[in-house]
Length: 223
Image (cartoon, rainbow, N blue to C red; front, side, top):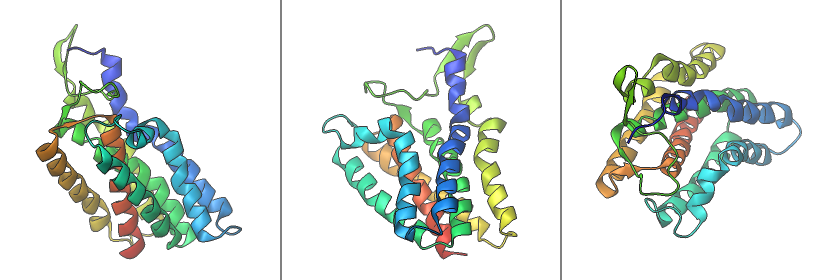
């Protein structure tokens, strides 16, 4: 199966697309943090990226629509969202703003690596992410994995994190903040590989939320 090159390259910009919900979530905490209870502000901040990616998350709740995860997907997202709210509510406003701005693109960058490590579930009618197929074009066969691990993909995911660390004078435990979510991604890979050996866009979206939870927890409790 071959894909147009422009479609394959779209995955490069998934972390960059995360800057939009990240900015909206961070701004909601910044402007509402002093006027609303922390739990309400945190809930708004968490629901914004979920609303932006609602198509992927809706499939986790529709019976029979998520063939790979089944009921596990519904349980995980139902548990993950309240935990994210509690973690964000426990942070000072400034730290919460920075963590949301950095965490959403970073979690997308890390979750996207599952595309490299698992085969796509092309049998699913909900599959829209672009897998590591080979593209036959003017330059011959080009492995699409090259684009996922490209400099742009890395930069879009890591630059907000660097900004957060700079704003906090590098006082945060950057090693755990970075490698903790990577470990979560690896364990998700092992679980998915042993159970399904595949992925679709709902799986990657759920993985990004679990990785985001680990990122926020590291920022909140390991300062």
